[in-house]
Length: 216
Image (cartoon, rainbow, N blue to C red; front, side, top):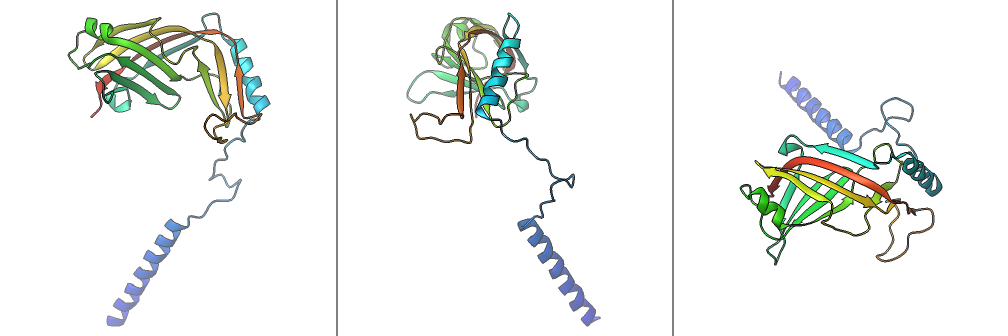
């Protein structure tokens, strides 16, 4: 029995070694085996710009209409933080395809009255918004506002119970795209074929209803 115990012990050591080796050096299934998913090749600059121009042409008169609702705080929402060295507060909404921020002149708490929230509101910044129907492999496409942040056209419809309801009606002046895999030094121009901008104004009508709270 002692010899058997030694043999089983060796067998266990071998199993552990093989499992660890497999975890460190996973076997990549061959292409076409059905176990691996190939990403589509990135579009060329000309293809990306052509797709963006076609998308712009297909927009209705009312432009880009976005309706966003997040039910649970666990699924995302506006997270607030104090701006260092100032009384102001900034709330950021971030998820794939989205990055927008709201600025306030002073603190906004859970029990801040709606009238005070409206009074303290200073700006919205739309750094990134989705473009439904326009998905170009290997490219980031972004609608562009004439200024980085603004107040006009923004209505805080409601705010309370840890939520905010917001409507933004404005105009973009252009649609731009870039290949994020191409990195250049700060202030350096992007190489040809890695960036485009189509200057054509189009409206935005954004409605968002989401959790709204100071970050922990």
